[in-house]
Amino acid sequence: MIKERVEGFADEKFARVRGVFEENLASGADLGASFCATIGGETVVDLWGGWADEAKGRPWEKDTIVNVYSTTKTMTALCALMLADRGELDFTAPVARYWPEFAANGKEGVTVAHLMSHASGLSGWKEPLRAADLYDWEKATRLLAEQAPFWPPGTASGYHALTQGYLVGEVVRRISGRSLGTFFREEIAEPLGLDFHIGLPASEDHRVADLIPPPPGDPLSAPAPSDLMVNMMTNPGIDVLATRTRAWRAAEIPAAGGTGNARSVAGAHVILANGGLAKGRRLMSEAGARKALERQVDGVDQILGARIPYGLGFGLADGPIAFPNPNTIFWGGYGGSVIVIDYDARATYAYVMNRMGVTTIGDARGMALLHAMWAAQAA
Image 1 (tube, rainbow, N blue to C red):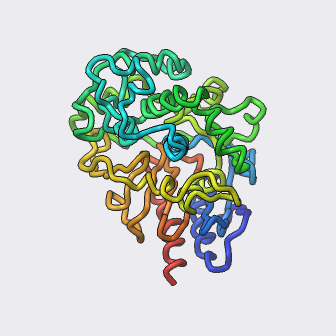
Image 2: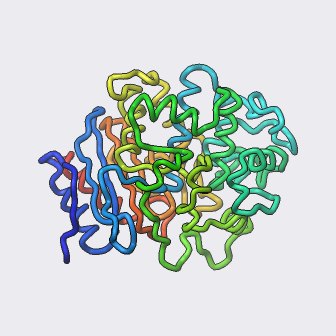
């Protein structure tokens, strides 16, 4: 195998993590990627390497960023958790308290917690949507406010792949007077110096790695896909190549449109893992940071087809992935990116890449890096 260029650092204890990262690139499993881990708020691994484009004309640099699809959802959840910690948002309150129009069509009892845990019954739009409609915040949120749920809210989860960002984002906007992307930038990214964007300025386009579409084979394929699955996957369909356009990058799509690197993803979630403290700043209380662990719904997700227990904005530790510590939350993005927050170890682990796998919430590449981290910590 050809040894691809890898830069950054890994503390001596985590040398094997660097080895796994190098193997992913050398084997071709990864084209370009970054991985970052923090413990107690301190960075212990920060690696990047490979290529930002399929032609291998642009090296993946320290400041290369990439669309991370649903890993963006965790940033959106962080904004809501921050508002709740300040007493401005009550997760048990009806969404309509903050967004009165949302009460239409039998949704007066839908709570903000239902939105955060994919249990609101709004896994997709009933009205036919064009891909360009994702760039129209007013239309996307208005249609969700007007429609009836697909199932009784709170009774089950059904992955809100695109809608969750608009739903939670509109609640954040109604409370704060700022769009989700602006709130995130002003309250989290800028104070912590994080290179993560929900709505990317054109000035940063030159740093964005090209996402390489996954090989054929749908991650949600089933012999007889349910109507919910078909609706979520096709209304509108997702074109990976759209992530290379200015329209996609500029839009605030808070469930799927975030652009960043592993350093920024891990750095944002230090707030949760480290009890509300990050880079010497107290951004949340310890209790507020642990709020994400509160179980909201459990059972087989009607769209993902696996049992996923959800907290507030994240999957919990006793689901499909075996985590070493019980107080752990996670989520990942279409293609393979992933973030894990381990409260017991006060650790965050983030992986992002541009060669997409056939997966919705993490895959073997990220898991190999996680297992190398865990093995080193257990040694």
